[in-house]
Amino acid sequence: MKLFSIFLLLMTGLTLLPSNITAAEPVKLIFDTDIGNDIDDALALAVIHALQSRGECELLAVTSSKENPYSALYCDVVNTFYGRPEIPLGRVQQGKTPKDGSYVRKVVEYAPEGQPVFPRQHASADELPDAVSLLRKTLAAQPDHSVVLVVVGFSTNIARLLQSPADEISPLTGTELVGQKVKLLSQMIGRFEPGKPASFHEYNVREDVPAARTLFELWPEKVPVVASGWEIGRAIQNRAVSILNDYNYVKYHPVKLGYEYWHKMPYDRPTYDLTSVLYAVRPERGYFGKSAAGRLRINQQGKLEHQQDSAGKHYFLTVTPEQVVRTQEVLESLSSQPPSH
Image 1 (cartoon, rainbow, N blue to C red):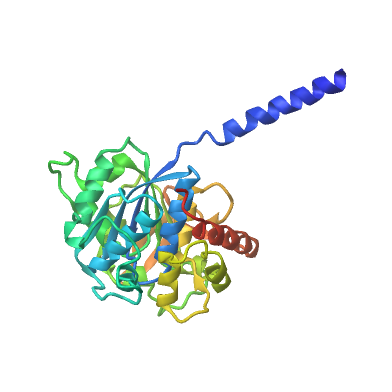
Image 2 (cartoon, helix red, strand yellow):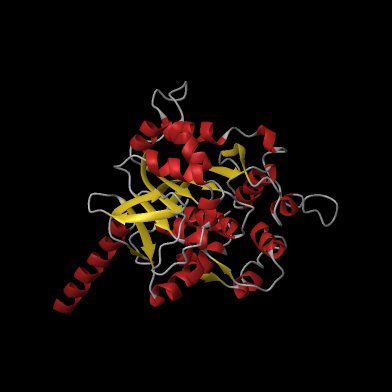
């Protein structure tokens, strides 16, 4: 009888434990991306959908910082594929990198039998609102200090958001709106490892230096920023073996097809943008380390620097060899997870 009582007590404790662990609300997420310039953006969007299917996040909106209509339309295809065609989309106006790139247009228009195989909500990107307008509308509708902003391309849209004036959407300026609604900026940007080459200009900074400078000059001091540098994604590779084997649950997969168009298969590819998504949704799971507190700024040479400052709220991610192995497996599993519908 005594043993049975101990067993009952243990089972009661185990029953109570999961409810405490899973009680966290889904992370409210906005994804700003230059999708089409690299394939990791597509994998990162797939990771977001997998995490939403697990109840860990809610994708509020996707905005494209690539000045190409097929960038946003590819996001439309991916969102529809994962069963969430209603997610609002916005596109940059007069932005950077207008060329199609090697995969977004090809996937959107992919029609091996005469008709496009991937459904989408919007026939044309002309139907989509300006990114800044959508960002303001999305933030204004959310509770205070509730939104995580994931930026994995140029800083164009976010700089313009911060510079935006009060309007019919919100009586707050862009900087005020971000300060009131955003609780974290998780951004793939810069390079922070010791001994980095002096000549290195990280792509997301280099393509729109003025926007990156504006972002870090106007970003509200009380809102934390965590940068995932070039070296983090470079260390954690998405392997070709996953692309070749883990996406075959459907005949046509927009992420797999994009990967195959991006470069000749087979090849491994860094997980640059995926790391910012993973940290944004699971910051306490030990996938990464984090630098000391400091402040990020763009120097006179147009490069991102991190200056240690105990009063600052800007950090960059670090990674150990053990974390590389673990995080690689997690990201490959999430990015290849089938839709929940």
